[in-house]
Amino acid sequence: MDTRDLSIAEMGRALRAGAVTSVQLTQDALGRIAAQDGALHAFVLLTEDLALSQAAAADAALKGGTDRGAFHGIPYALKDIYDTAGIRTTCHSKLRLDTIPAENSVVAARFEAGGAVLLGKLATHEFALGGPSFDLPFPPARNPWNPAHITGGSSSGSATAIASRMVRMAMGSDTGGSIRGPAAWCGLVGIKPTYGRVSRRGVFPLSWALDHCGPLSRTVEDSVLTLQLLAGHDPLDAASADVPVPDYAADLQKGVAGLRIGVPRDFFASASALTHDVLAGFDQTVAQLRAAGAVVETITLPDYALFAAAGRVIMMAEAFAIHEANMRDRILDYGEITANRFILGATVTSADYLAALRVRREVTDAVNAALRSYDALLCLSALNTAPSFATVTDALSSAAPMQTIPFNVTGHPAMSVPIGLGSDGLPLGVQVVGRAFDEAMVFRVGRAIEVLSGWESVALPG
Image 1 (tube, rainbow, N blue to C red):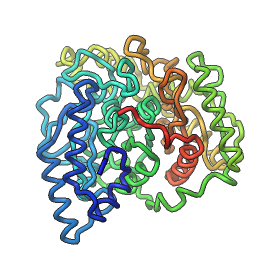
Image 2 (cartoon, helix red, strand yellow):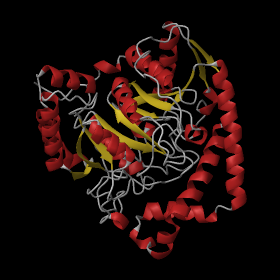
Image 3 (cartoon, rainbow, N blue to C red):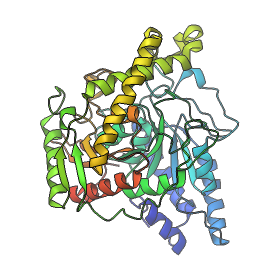
Image 4 (tube, rainbow, N blue to C red):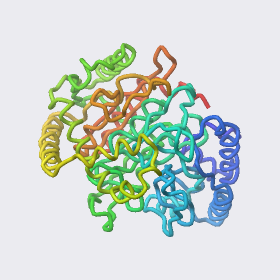
């Protein structure tokens, strides 16, 4: 059986039917990694022996009548900021090359309890912020659609591994767009759940107020199955929300007929980085949603720049607080880009930080007000397709092409969904935003876009 394009659900059905084993799925994935990763640099550490051992255990358990759920026997990989017991966790930095956690992160523990198979740890930008950089212990991951181009950050290795079909799902993290950006630029689904929906305990922080954990995957359904496993309250994560987790698949195929979708068009309409291909793709998506029975209307939110400014101030102040001691004592061990970005946090005053928090409350209220009239919002994930390494711009610039940070500031669930390819052969994506803890609606709208766009028939490059 060719396992390269099997979805998580299809792998599960094949395992239970005896048509494939977890060991075979794992060996096939390891073979694809061996064939491709030398050029793409998705992995910073392969856990081959562990993976084969976990796969054999999964097969034995299933044969013995123990079924741990949707991820039983399914290979996956982790961004290298997730703690893994006894396995190096570097944050792609010289400062943590010798860090071997004693315990799993909550996310890793939930995968282990669900019988999943860990293939290894994935490249990121240093401490999930600075990059792509060539002065770090590991090379930056490359975009499988065109290796001369970047993936976006900071869940770069996660996007590369999926787009090249090494693995079906990989975990990322998102502080300003680090799941949705790589998903958009690599033709993947990437969801940032509601703030507090997935425990961040055991994940190295960038900004306590903005950090989210979530998956990147080939399809919306893959992400549904992943979030179903991971969502839930963790009393030891101070930001974790004690909110019931619904069945995310229940309404997945219901389509958009009768739904109301708001479009904050001013976010991007006059942005200098916006390309014709991206705008045309977005407008086509709007037309498809209307034809499918949705009411799609333009709405007004506060200026995009206000969301972005609040997010940057909060992020840089908190990042500097996290790294202050090492910035004083070991600054030369950071990559140049990371050090230059973290040092900005030293200039943020308490008045600046408090002002940003006040703005955060105001813009969150504005988004909540819009979502009282609309079931979801639709906007862009990025203003352009993935740039080349030779033309990378500062991801923290107010003119940056990513359109993701507003919903880190507000905490609403947001998902990037691919809609096609641009004239340069690189992926295009749109972003679906929902009410707090209504990931089910985000999935529903995203699934409709996935079907209407025809993206499922587009072959990934791996």
